[in-house]
Image (tube, rainbow, N blue to C red; front, side, top):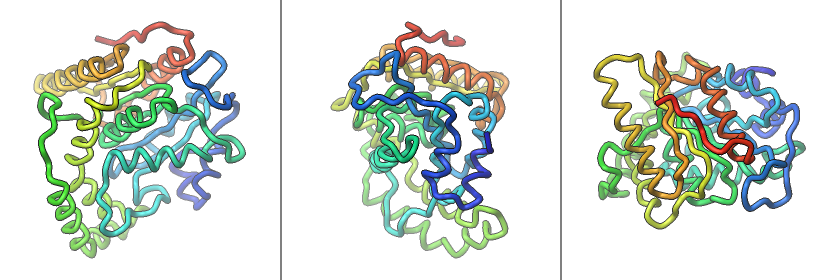
Length: 295
């Protein structure tokens, strides 16, 4: 299996790059719920400013699955967001939905997907699961960006977020210069835009919870820690997030603590992440009744 980041960086069309990563996959025409005969596509989504290559070892350990890499904007050959565009979890979820229409073998439709979202991609996969439950086989949150409070909306103003994004564009000559030496010359601009919109993306996912419950699909909330005392706060917040997901349509949501690992948990502990993904796949297919969380 070629490295995810490398194949996209060589300039291949995005969907062509996707098709290089599957060796066998079975798709159904229009399933309503996952069944034992359906293998969902596995979508790998890194966090802001993170290369697709951080998932290389994970993908290499899943040779029998359809792997669908979805880089961040400005990374690994994916274009920069349009000027004036305000990033949002709902908008990105819809873009992902469109991608799945042609992400299967031969440009076919991927009926159901298991979404693996790292860091800032957490609100995106949650929004997808709530907006498109019939296309969602399962969710895996990797050290995801989550609400800082009790999960209630913060009342953020979209106008203020738009102004912050506009300011990021005003600094684009600086951020583009600073990253011009790297293989991702648009990286820092897109990180700046994502920073401006992060709280809004979390807010959008939060606002969907009362009106768009998740389907009862397998969900894994993965939290990385080096075991340092203060990191217990982060583990506690992720546990509260797990409880929130259970209360809003995903009673099987399980917490998995991976230690020792940094925020790039998919790179630090690929074997453990693959084990969790395979457990979610088995649950989605009905072959396993419940995940076995680490704690």
